[in-house]
Length: 100
Image (cartoon, rainbow, N blue to C red; front, side):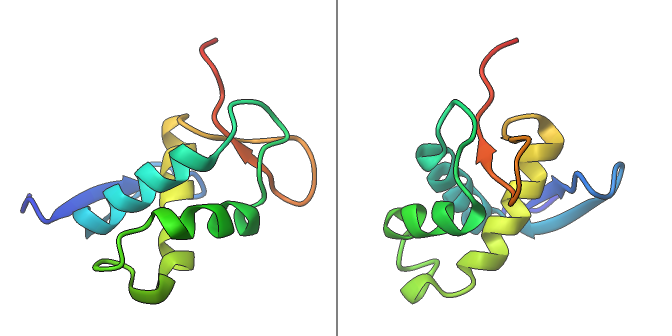
C-alpha cells in the first residue's frame, strides 16, 4: 500500500475498509484524541470539532476545510478499533475509554 494512504474501518460497516489520505487522517486522529476527555459523557462531534480546529495544520486543512468529513471518518475508524467510545446519552457524545 502506498505510504500516502492508510486503510480505515467503519464501525457501521464491519469488515469494510477504505483507503484515505494518511497525513490528513493522522493529523485529525491526533487532534481528536487530544481534545476528547477520558470520561463520559465526553464531547458531541460539534464540540469536538470546535475544540480540535485550532490543532489542525493549516497546510492540510486550510481554514478548517473538509474537517467535518475527516472528523467523521476518523471517529468511525477509532470507534471500530475501540480507541474511542460513545456515551449512552443523546445526542452522540464521544470519549476515550480507559483500560478495562
